[in-house]
Amino acid sequence: MTFLVRGQKHRRKVVFERRAMAGSDASSSASKSVEDAVSGSSQNRQPHLAEPSSRLGDEVVDSVFRSQRVATMSATAARASMVPDLFTSPPHIRDLLNTQSSQIQEETIQECLPFLSGIEPGASYNDYGVPHLERKHHIQFLHKSLKKLPAPYVAADASRPWMFYWALAGLSALGEDISQYREPLISTVRPIQNVTGGFGGGNGQMSHLAPTYGIVLALAIIGGKEALDVIDRRAMWKWLGALKQPDGGFQVSVGGEEDIRGAYCAAVIITLLDLPLELPRDSPAWTNEGATLLTGLAEWIGRCQTFEGGFSGLPDAEAHGAYAFCGLACLCILGDPHVMIPKYIDVPRLISWLSARQYAPEGGFSGRTNKLVDGCYSHWVGGCWPLLEACLEGPSRPSVGESQSQAINLYSREGLIRYILCCCQDRTKRGGLRDKPSHSSDSYHTCYVLAGLSSAQHKWHFNPTETRIETSGNLASSYQWTCEPFVGDGHIYDEEDRVGTLHPVFVIPEGAAEKTRAYFVSKGGF
Image 1 (cartoon, rainbow, N blue to C red):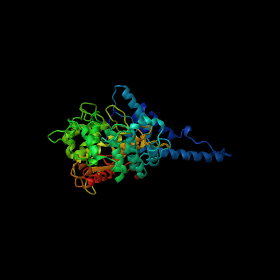
Image 2 (spheres, rainbow, N blue to C red; image 1 turned 90 degrees about the vertical axis):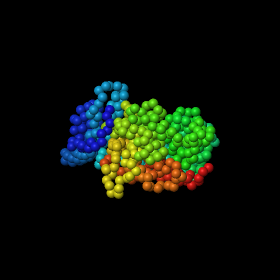
Image 3 (cartoon, helix red, strand yellow; image 1 turned 135 degrees about the vertical axis):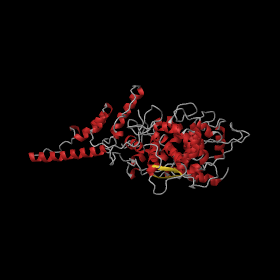
Image 4 (cartoon, helix red, strand yellow; image 1 turned 30 degrees about the vertical axis):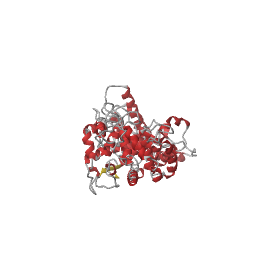
């Protein structure tokens, strides 16, 4: 495996050069598909609709079909020639050690190549060999996921809060009106809030930071006084105090595991709900020295960075892409990214590890070393880049009229967009987005693939002079981000395929976090 190298823009002059350059069986199936389309093989020829009555008729009909074949050949060749070789050929550098992991990686490459090469049957491609976003089908899929689900979903009862968030965030990114779900959401989540604070996954289940995070974000997306007032802030504060640990981190539930997911989810809840930072006296982390909910949290996150450069779920474990996002986003809640990130982590090592997660020819991201590309890491890894770019750019932003190409871009936006639009879309009537072509779409991947697409299509800046809301002074950095459409290198999609913006820290529609925080600031204490 090899990671994707930015800047390789060589375009092929002839379609068949791809097969010659690759010199590998792994690209044979993709090249053969192009050859069949270009040559107009007998399998692709249309049958005569009627038998002509004369030789002149035969010649006319044959001429028509020859013209059709030539047109098909020209369109296919032109489309395929616009796809860089990087995305249509197997890697040129390979590890010669043959293992089960390398074999599965080869299979994944062969699986993705036909989709990346612009030859998927029935797909509509633009001039860059990229299919359009099947917005209508994806919207229908997400609406369906909020309706009555089949009986096997009973096994996922504890994940219902996540399903609310995935669907509402995805629909919002696609520009869909979600107001119809306000009352159903409120009536569903109200009874699964526990009097001791926080939400369970379902009725009668103990409070856990993961479903609590999902419900808080879902309520923030749907917005409005009635929705936000569902949350018992005082009980939430006391419950978070019970989860806070003396070493700085958070358990995900009382007596549960302590990991970086808990740190991120707790930080999101604290800032969105404008909770007091002081600890309840019965918190296991309370001290006479005035420890707070945030004491030692940044230091604990720093200890989760591994020897590879990525982040593990807790100190001294394996690096994982989702944990990297949780760690970076948590630091960006605690303070300005250009201050907090380099203070607590080794930025060059993290950039090296994250860069190695983007593969060629697929263009998408993997979540761990020697693992396969997966659509959900379009966000979990792809969402790390805006935070790191803001860290390196500092508090300033490009001046008006300055080319975005002069701004810092740490990854191949083109590669990620190609993987998402070519390989992650279910373009059947089912709709939705998926891990990779051989997998079925689901609301989890639909949400996070769209989040990755949104991030790649927009450029975020941390702008401390931007006053988005009036805060009470605590954790204001998350509300000082501004965004603009990205129009630089990698803009290979049509504007109709651009999705809405999702906040780089909270991953909810731009403006929703600001409105939520402003509402709770206006309420004052509890």
